[in-house]
Image 1 (cartoon, rainbow, N blue to C red):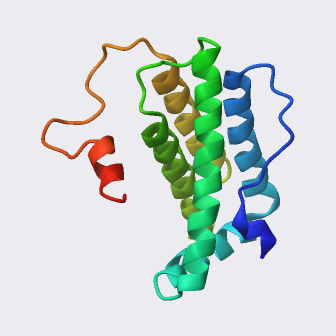
Image 2 (tube, one colour):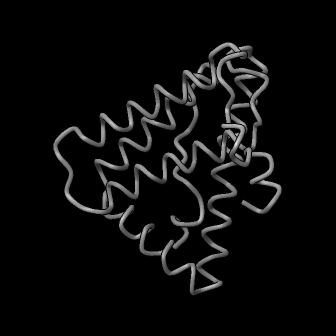
Length: 157
């Protein structure tokens, strides 16, 4: 059960935050290959958490650790001048966690074509790397008709 309380953490030997971000994706890719049943259990527990407050607390704690780790990588990259400083740190970390959970959920839901998960994870990694490193001033992060990340998070999202 301890394995479920915090995300997998490889010792960071990354020379900078961009390499550390890439390592997070490599760790997920490795875990998807080596221990796919882990993601089935996580998916089942996420569903059970809706009915079981104790499981919900464990999941919330795990998500909190995960967001903190991703946020720390983002902040490190901002300090190193590698990542955009205009990003909402918590919202960006939360969004990345949700994307990674989506890939893991997709993996847990059945057999996939050879290379499918690697391709999906590589695409998400490329999108996140571009998002976190591109120059500000591009299209708005949120469509004007939708609730922005700050409002969503303030509402308990």
